[in-house]
Image 1 (cartoon, rainbow, N blue to C red):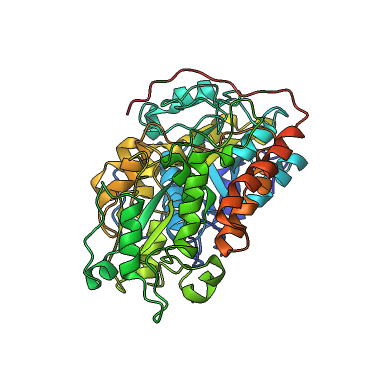
Image 2: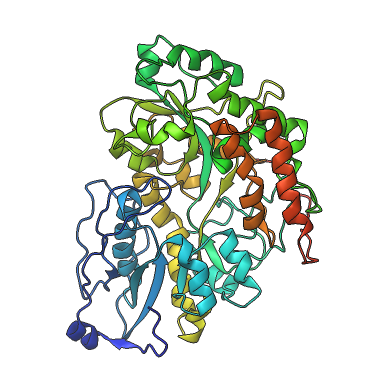
Length: 501
């Protein structure tokens, strides 16, 4: 909880009160986190408690020397759900490393599920640092929920190995870009900062190498199109064994929206925020193919059957029941543990639309944001240091080892430790992230309501409750109702950016 009158803590007070906190065990509901694993809730300063081993994997080298502790110690709280699995390992390592680098800052982890962020911000109970997203950032920016850290970030960036030119940048996530809907999007950071990039995710495809080999099917290549997926999917599908050529592309961000982008859809909204273009040919053709994997080509299972197929393993692919999986490439570290030695698997190039010969991608990011609680408590600079550490290459190098999510910068994604198997094909991470025309969640005031309305008919198409040719028009109609009901006169902004790697 946020303490309204927190004061400086002397080393003697810390020793008397005790800085070691019992581990907390929680479970993440999203992004592949499945097995509970305790993470220490507090990182004690280096002079108070010696860091203990968290993992046998070698940690990335840290070139910044530890600083001798000074007279007083400041405490900051940060809210996260990175407390189990591969993400929990990185968090534990990070708490201990940050205590070495900043021995006068006591960091306390406050586990909060993502859905509680708006409640915390609206009630004024948000901790000094909070794991957010575009909804959380843009929805509360105007109310003064966050602290501008631009100058402090520049001041401390080098210490935490933040390379601004290497960051993958998504506007209106932790920078004020006035709803920048430009396409292509900006390739480098721009705008005043209120936090720092931390947790990217991008769509891609996984495949079961062992299943391909057993079926006498050659490995996917960069020139594959949807036609190849159909052909191979039919060879791998075995109704009697309940084995399918692929998982259905029924995720919005990581499944059917990227198929629309591949097929020529520019963005999921028009520039004036007046129309949902899912009734246009590029979208409707992609919808037909996506739903067709289940009901026409019969190479993917019905989403209603996923729970029975996955059993104890969390997904049919991890259970060995699907040869290919269009999904979000974020939690592969957890899948390494879940799959173990049961079969070989790899990332694969995203199949292209046969119409455009292109593969489109969508991505998102979650930042750590510095809230106004840090200003009220006088710890803005300490909070800024923490978000820079979490988003800098010291910590992100650890992310590349544990692989709870995609590292947030080009340098870490190219490191040997990040690319080392298992699984194979991790270079696809960088190949997909480096595409300069990747789409993201273009923010506006009614985005969450629009998604809830517009995306519903697609679910009915996958389950067979709505004909494929009726899905696109139904999505457009439902989405346009939300757009027409907007009362805000605010419009997106646009700028010209070069689409260059």
